[in-house]
Image 1 (tube, rainbow, N blue to C red):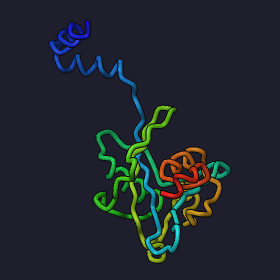
Image 2: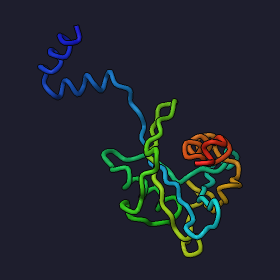
Image 3: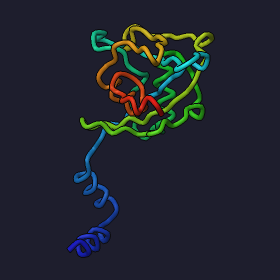
Image 4: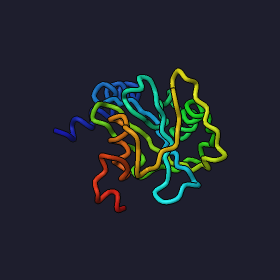
Length: 168
């Protein structure tokens, strides 16, 4: 039965096959997230976090949705500049491991890492999209948004990380 299905499917014109796949396949929003570490911080280090409206939700990471056909590293660099004023070239961003995190509510984050010296890297926020940007010790993070806490746990960081993850 599968052989018959695929044989018929591959005889269809490519545009029709693409439409059928789009109808049947799950769709996701795709975002780019950057873990920005302070290259000068001793010990566990420091992580750049943002406070965005509404502030009561907690602190988050520089992130945003990719535009159509935008390469993930380009989108991550763009969002980082827009939200913090930190300008890096896309090739300076390293893919985090894991590089993609699929969330149960239907979006995918492509995650990158970069280190910058906090003492010489000015932070600029617009006050509308981002209220505050600040460096926080990784071993003493402030209240995080639920999404950020779950994402950081994938990297063994934060309150939801298990002791085994922190030992990595």
